[in-house]
Image (cartoon, rainbow, N blue to C red; front, side, top):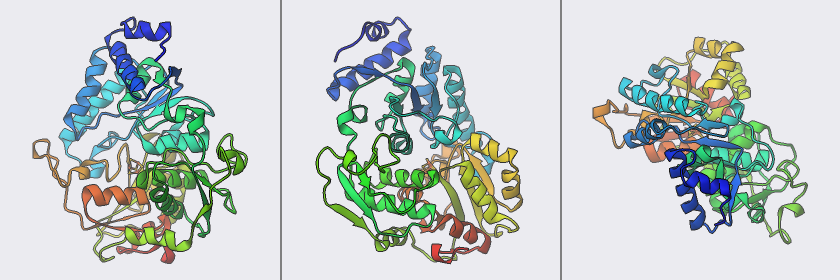
Length: 423
Ligand code: F3S
């Protein structure tokens, strides 16, 4: 791989041992993928340092102790505890304290302590053709597909890229890989954000690691619908980019999205979407412990939606309603009076984490030494196919998948309200 004089200087330690170590690992990554050279990156969404996994926090604190500094705008991914109000999720204090050490490391390194899977709603909005890195698949697919930035699904290498400002040119950083592999025709009526989530889950399973191109639907989806679509595509498949002609830069139409003639279209009907709802709806609807909305972390518009649905209502006394978002959006929603209004209705507005990222993730492998012994959970009502998949895999309880409208109605009624029955 061809290195510039600046790359070589970093490698030789000109900017300190942490940057040298980071560059050495990036060179190894580039060589593994036959990258011809490195690109300058303009943004990095990096690892938070997950407190549920002790070694993870140490990785971040070791870097900070070695004097590491991020040299491009950087945001931290979701964490294992709500650092703004750790009691809100019932987290053990030891977990909060450990997570706080990772937050201290981020502050020392200069990254924004966003602690979210939707940093774009918190102001991190990379533009067309910006090379970037991301540890979170939801961020990768949103930035590639909606903003036209260029990102792979990165692991810890995202942190190394943030420390050097460089990343090997391979994958979705190469023009040749940013082309459609499958054509998808949407024949299902899509009325809610969760319908787009189910569409994404179905298509992701069909196309695997491909780049689906959607024939333009009758109406342009909202940013929240695009977010839900991308998150689910990246969950059931390895999708890192989708193309919606007329929206995804720079593809004006279906023909432009393919290198050659488009392949025959894969049709997605109402029954395909219904099947995803059915797959993640098990168990009796009257044995629910938790209702969750805000996966991916809610935007300001979604906060407004939830607050409106809760207006004048009261969460049932047998149920917890969690609304998860970033601390930045939470602060904006506080300014607008939305958080207070939802809390008055009995909801818990939680930032920095989510059900599958908090201590519940250790349901099958508790850590009593850290006080991480998650409560037994019968069923969780959700409005996101992504969250449902991870709850099934990690918390291993029943899930009941509905729309946001159905989820809020479930929290109020104290029993599951399917999407069709929502208000
Ligand atoms: Fe974010 Fe948790 Fe969903 S990390 S995308 S809210 S599963």
